[in-house]
Image (cartoon, rainbow, N blue to C red; front, side, top):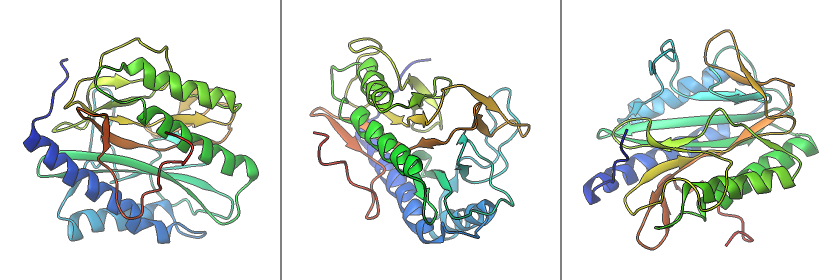
Length: 266
């Protein structure tokens, strides 16, 4: 598959889709507390995307080859769930960490972002994992510029995660995005600098490191979607949609409630 270089008109549509996606995460944040079910969070997000924003939740009924249709509008991955957690009757409790992954389609274009939420008083390890994973995201983002390579992104993420005593999930990665949910290129969260595809202005892709507190090994649950750590260790993920510009990068999934880049990451 070829990589689609976005036109100025397409980029403007993706800015809108990205902002709407971030605003869903802003909206849902106050509801992420002890006692709420992941299914209720999904319902709230669905109603907000469809009823308030006039958008479409991309995950709902999404069915890539080999998968059954995804049954919900967001992904909600709790504690040792790595990604693609299917919302349901599970109640969040004090000490949980949860990743909410939202993708909004607006005017035919996708915005994709996820954030970690901490419920009540979490453990030191959980807080550290969420913090380091957020730093990994931004260390990857700041590598993005015309002429850089995809391997630069993965290397920066892998170095920081492993230096911090954590591991990088290998089986899932970031991806190109635009009129389709998943496009080329694949954006690995590990690798060697100066390797891989050279970045060009107009490329748009996600960076979404999945970092485990224990070993990197994962397995798939019986629902065919939910991915968990094999050793039952905690896992965290953050995600943004990124545009390569002539001067560097632009984060398309920003909003009033988006956490700022850590000060020490230049």
